[in-house]
Each structure stands twice: as C-alpha cells, then as structure tokens.
Image (cartoon, rainbow, N blue to C red; front, side, top):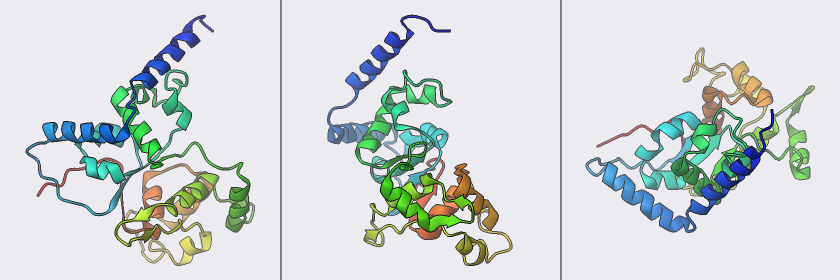
Length: 236
C-alpha cells in the first residue's frame, strides 16, 4: 500500500545524492587515484594496454576499488541497468541492484562513466529510434530479429577508439550464419569458453546477457578487448 511521504523521502534522498556528487570529474579522477595509491601503495600493477570491459555489476561492485584508476578511466561498463536507476536510485529502488546503486562511492563511479559515455545500460536501448529500426532490417532471420540491445551496443562500440589498433572498434558480428559456420566456436568441438554456436545465436535474439555469450560476442569481433566479470590483480 502507499504510505504518504515515502515519495517525498525518496526525492530528498536522490537530491542529496546528486548534491554530493562531484562537480568536476577531473578532480574526481585525481581523488580516486590518491585513494587507490593509499590503499595499494605497495602493489605494482602490470600495464595492460587492452581496454577493460566489465560485464557483471556484482563483480564490478566487489572489485572496482582494486582496479588501477588508469584502467578504470578507459574501462567500458556493460551492465544490466537503466540510466534512471543510477540517476534516482531511491525513486527506482525496486530492483535487485538497489543497495549497490545507493552506495555513494559506487554511484559516483557509475555517474563518472556515464559522463564519459563509457557506461552501456543494457536495459535502455534505441529500439524506438528510426535509424536503429532501419539498421535492424539487416539482422532479421526468419521471424526472429536481433535484440535492439545488441544493435545499440554494436553502434556504441563503433564510436570507441581502440588504443591497440589505433582505429575504431569493429561492430559486433550479428549474423546467425557466421556463428553457425565461420565463428571460432563453430570450428571447434568445444570452444574456448565451452560455448556452442546455438548459445550465441539464442543470446542474439533473447539478450539474456549470459556472461560467456557476452564475452564471446565481444571478443569474436574485437580480440583487443579485455572482457571481465571482475577485476583481478596481476602484480609483477
């Protein structure tokens, strides 16, 4: 049932979170670096030139403080979220990630990545965008159509610069025939991630966001991505 005042309380909480949010993201990055150095002063992290891609919100939440700020700066986050949940976590608190999104430091991290256009909210897509609808025509197979989420993510990737190739990232491979006949997992009795072409094809149409499928989709077209569920230290 509805309790008078709850809506007002959630608005105040969201306003407070927004008010305390860093105004200058450059200063935020400097502060993040200082905190990391204090917490990990004795750890020397080996440099990884690949762009890190986090595909698990739980893994990111548990490990982001251990991730070097230089890696976080370029990291792409692909998470099962809606942008409005991040902007107003108290108003939209009836989701399973609510407690994480109300964590101030984690909330600021997500807002920072949003400001960089390096946070892809998988629950928001451009399904109603006219250009996306025209683009989607290429990926209709029988009565099935590739999920707008994958089309949107593919378009986002093509806008990003790959520091290794010094070019923009390639679009995702969304062709069902390719996955059946030409993909790396179709040429093996058991793929490197224990995947079958049928698993990836199902992911293309259902957008279930299964970690192994997401990693396979991303790395098949862009092997220079470092796709992870959580950050792992690699000291030297």
